[in-house]
Length: 207
Length: 396
Image (cartoon, rainbow over all chains, first blue to last red; front, side, top):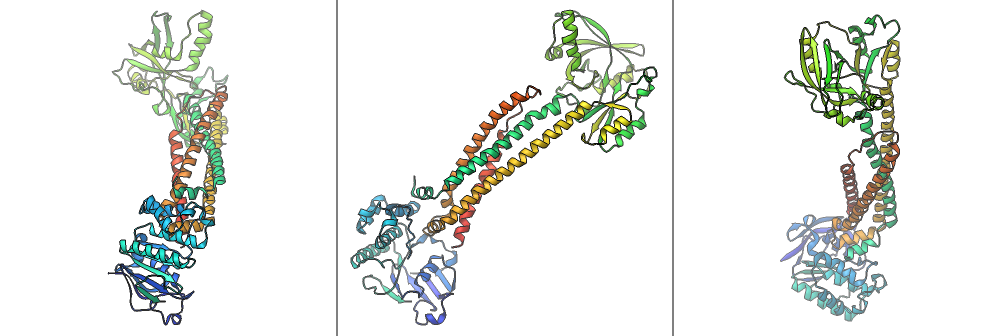
């Protein structure tokens, strides 16, 4: 089942000639199916974050059309989309654990035990109550991903989520994401700079 | 404490809130005190001074040596009354209706009250000029009881002069109001006995007043049919501070009770002071709220990324501002409660001083007004805080 469809979509501030080889932008129709994992691959500055922001609904500077479950994207709520931002958007005033419970407080999606297990699986158990400001970038990325999993979603957007992680961590986290998205019958869109061999995706789209 | 509140507690503008509470406290105390004292003092100037309204003057011709024998000079002619009525500072003019029959008052020896039998005079004025505290003033021809208003000076003269010199008991206003005595009216060869009861006292009207309906009835049935011009008139003034008022009456050789005018002027100045204080205090309150909201705005802009991020991870604007709204609600409520108690304490202290020079009754407290002020402040701040966050996140 098609979850998201793009029709001739392109950010207004990127020249059309720069998108000539894109498999996503300025295409008559690009469909993202439910239960499928996609990698959106491109070098820096090609508009990966722009695409995810447009789909999430916080970026309005685009041409073309975007539908979500057949409905125009401008009319949908974001409560079915989980987004792990490139700049993570963690709160430095809070600990790693509090950053996660802050989000889970709205959704009540995970139990305390489930969240603790996620921290353990992500190798963050020792840093659980450490201030987010003092975590390494890799640790912060993992906290942001755990937070992203603390809500029911039909679409999971991850913007360069593994840029500061080692291969082993990528493999473990990808397994968890895959399992979670299958349980939720959700689509996963991962923006990546390239070299995505470790990411178990169903489709890779060149931006 | 939930995680969101913990996050917000770290960025809340505590100093500004303390400043807001302090300035709001000062403004609220002044507003409440000005309004409270206004209500406390108002009855003294508007009600207690007399059964007459405070803007009513009693006017009579000056009695000179030439008029003592020929009384015609003390009466107001119709054209004179019309001229007074035409003055810009006059709202209305009414005349005293005088009795054209004989009146006797009497009582029998009873309960230590001495018997008396005396000539009396009655006058009547339109009811709209009376600020009565009694509901027994209406009179019909079938009534056997005549309600009477006497000058309070009569009672004082009895208590501190007559009773003192004759070793008689003193009488309070309440006691005399409970007593009834006989009234006999005589005219056109007939007479009738009524009961009389004093229902109120007048501070500034030197006359014995009865209902105008009684005077009309009695003059029609017992009067000697002589149409006498009034010697005293009542003037309802529109503006007691009109500079032309006193010179006009002086030029016409008309005596007015200047005390009432002075009292009106004092009350007018009191009102100006209360209004001035009230307006200044309202400005202080508005400024305190504005400064607080500015403080919140600065806090929102300083921590813009925090609120943007909260919005992006799924928090609604309402959820983000709720905690700050609770803080403002609690601060404003506690401040106004404190202001209320301070006002009441100050009110007591000021009343103690004022009661040495004025007789003031305790007016209703301003609970409703305070509650209204609280509600307005809370609604304004709660909406403004919400709006600030909406503006910040709209820009995303």
